[in-house]
Image 1: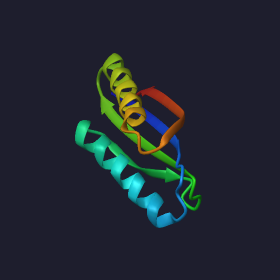
Image 2: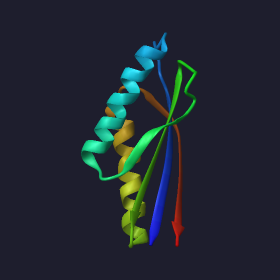
Image 3: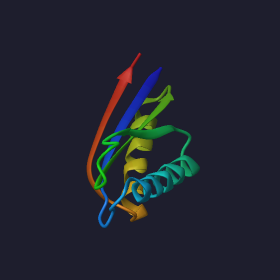
Amino acid sequence: MVVGIGIITFKLHDCRSLKSKRKIVKSIISKIRNNFIVSVAEVGLNDIHQKAEIGFAIVGNNRGLINSCIDKIFDLADSIGLAELIDTEMEIINL
């Protein structure tokens, strides 16, 4: 079994409240869920208006396929355009 984990950090420009941040984060999460079969959630920076951290996990049996899927998720997150992608992290674990 292969587990892929990714974390995406966004900078939210012109975001002045947690309510407006929540709207943007929910939109990004739903777009990722609609395009990929992954578990995704906001995992950090919950009280900061200007930044968001979204994490996701995917499970499979092929390391190359998991790596490719994570790269595609990063590309999608960057192309959405709702927020500036400032950092990505990924880890692939063989169990």
